[in-house]
Image: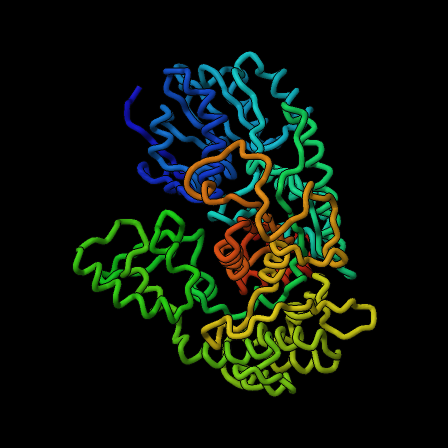
Length: 592
């Protein structure tokens, strides 16, 4: 047996073994650290007693999960020498024990059984499911190869820790499943999301009170709140202690249509702007260096420079870069693989002439979103504000975004006016970009049946330094209202109550079971968990950090099925008209 440590990068495509020495670096921040500690306390602890080197076998979800929160060295120190893909062909290693960390699906269970029938590939198996394993799958696995299984546990982590205070369910497809009129799996999708939210609460050791945004047009938030409430009760009834009480936490559930403005507005803070204007995939920015070679930088919390700059206005970032260049030049340090100053400079260049083009687009769209100009004067004629954007040679998506903001500002328009706008933007063949917002409960054409959606906003005079950052995401109002105990119970009814009143003084949670260092130490108050059905924007993610920092007595965690960029959202909206099998086309070649 070779003593070389091998780590496999399971990339899509050819199925070849990836780079040996690369696995996503771990993070010491917030949710990622909590998830890693949970994995240590379950999977790793069970295996520590054994001196035998072990193989870790993962499915695509758990590969991504583990890569998000642990370092290569963390696994090596626990005598895990090889990381393998559950669904790829593997050679038997009979002298080694195997750890299976997988989702409880029929596909995963069948792949596991194949590893031990007819002949075992490994000395023994330690099986860990991300979530509750249905009885039929558990029994099938036990009957087929029970004698090889040393441990079988459900560890309740079926969400993805995206950032310190951000999580996703890693399910972009949920958008179509929930909002498409042709969807055939809406109920199943909501059930899955509810289960994932329960594992988030379990990982955080919270049993929150649940509230949802009441909406005259949509029932999704109410349905999901009911599902989560029921599943949480069941989960804690099965808890070992059997005495779990509600903690000093709240879970708020809201539909994406609650605030259609924020995810399509041109945002000028660094992270949101970068993801809006630059092609960034899997949090990786690729660029050509001065020597012509292609390089890449990972935009995540392992890099404190990125963490420091990501929520700042682009003007502040631009001002800081020259100073940083001087400091770096003096120290001669450029950490390899991190987002270096040269990376930042390249990213700034890639943001296409935004100072000229974006200034006008942003100025007009912010006027529409806020309903007032930079001097605070009310926009009396929204069409007059919109026209300069339509008459200039901006991109199709930019014009669609401006038109949508115009319609949202009026709470809907006439069918005649909508047709003219569609003609102006030249999307006569694809009007779904605009029309399909009705599937989110957002009024596009004025009808008496639509419930008015405009929420009351908090007064924020002089809060923003920059004229092009005047819009505050609606969810920030909600976060602050909750912490200050001002949230309207008619608009946000309780699905289940907290044991004590939520208050701005930050009542300490009764449970301090998993008190830990760093971020948890500073949290002496309560937790607010917000889940947005249908995706969250980078602007809304930023609000969780801002409110936590400002309020100090409450940690805000925000999540959704996935993270949105304006382009992704518009394309998803357009695709809602398609049936379940229309999202892709299979090309079959025939040979003569």
